[in-house]
Image (cartoon, rainbow, N blue to C red; front, side, top):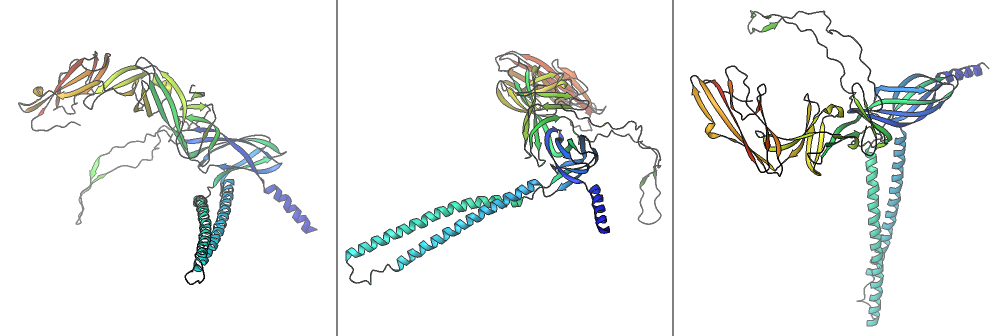
Amino acid sequence: MKNMLFVAFFLSIGNQIFAEEIIAETKLSQVTVYRVLAKELRNGTVSIPKGTSEVIISNVSLNMIDNSLQVAVKGNATLLTVSTRTNYFSQESNNNNKMVAKIKDTIQELDDELAWLSEQKSVYNGEINLINANNKLGGTEGLKPGDVTTLADIYRARTLELKKKIYDLGLKERELREKRDKYQGQLNEMNGKKSNPVKELVLNFSSETGATLNLRCSYLVSSAGWSPMYDIKVLNTNSPVNLDYKAKIYQSTGFDWKDAKITVSTGNPNRDNSRPILNPKFVDFTYYAPKPSYSGGYNAPVQMMEKSNMAMDIGRDGADDEERLREGNEAYNYDVNVNENQLNVEFEIDIIQNIPSDGKEHVCAIQSYKVPATYKYHAVPKLDPSAFLLAKVTDYGQYNLLPGTANIFFEDMYVGQATINPNTSGDTLLLSLGRDDKIVIKRTKIVDKTSTKIVGGSKKETYAWETMIRNNKGTAIDIEILDQVPISKNKEIEVELQEYDGAQYTEEYGKLLWNVTIKPNETKKIKLVYAIKYPQDKTIQEY
């Protein structure tokens, strides 16, 4: 009786200590893709009994970053603890094992068929050998010519029949072996890949009455991100720039993003967001230690620095702000909602997406703009003799652009690629639309104006260049020509600008800019002459 009471008491305690494990069915409903990393959002419901329960959310990517996990619960229960674990025997692994077993059964059936074909061929070959062994007419007496002919016909017919059977069996054997090789290759592939473990979320609840809970879990995963790309389409120089903004999304988290709502964010949770700390900087005299009296000593400078107990964090005030990630206007055949947060921009794509876990880039259109622009030709003959057509865009910050590669289309023709870099301090974004071969530019040295002279104790070198621009187009063009003169970094080196044909000169950078209008089939020339004067006994170099 006492033993029975003890057992009952133990079971009662055990029911209170050991929680019941319940598998919760959840669905990946939304993904926010950052430049690096992605945030997955799962939703689901689960029913728990009265008391303590352990709820398992399985099939979570092994690339999950544990510290980023957030769980929200709606229902009559208290969430006690949240933890993670790795499951090496997931449902995917079980499915994989079942597939392996099925393939092995198929291979065994094919092996049995091949073995039976081999036996049949052996029997037919034996019969042929038997016929050949008894095909000796030379020692047979009393056979008439007609009998010989009859025996030959019988031999030929039976042998051909057997050979045909062996041939047909060979064809069937080849077909079965090809089929078997495919199954064996698939088996080798599956056996070569270990069953991927998955991560599981372990949620411990306590409920006084039992309840049906709505679960919402979010967490960051690695091996995912996106990069921007653009299509720039210009019909002609009288039209605005059509700018298509796209996201190249990749992910290899181990699970496909099926029927998920995708949000593309310009944020990067992987960046170090700690503000820089300015530490004290000390200065002191440099003392030289006396030469040691022993042999082999040395005289070396010793930097004497006092230790300081002063706090090295100057002016630490305020706490780090927790990043607020919100769900995120125009695009192609679907809508994209744009949310401009304090630190980043989010593009929320309305249409459901499917992005497999293959590590490949999958392109999603996120915005399409008609951008007002002015057009002008630009050339730097010193570096390249080509004229480039530029689209100049002002107030470009409103488009939330990121550095990336752009495909350029001009007049319905693909002309190549260029790089967009909005991270510039200038007030104008320059988009290169390609080279125009109908504008010919040539920069040549003017020999009779190039010289080197000795004046007193100084050497004076004179450089002269002429740039020719020819417009072979049927319309007039406006083109800006960029050149330069060196900037002196020493007061003994003097740079003198002598001729520059009315160019706009920026002395600080040594930049010269000509704005030239050239009529159809017209040629214009501009001159640049400058001199460098420096001491005769020294040499100079440009860098």
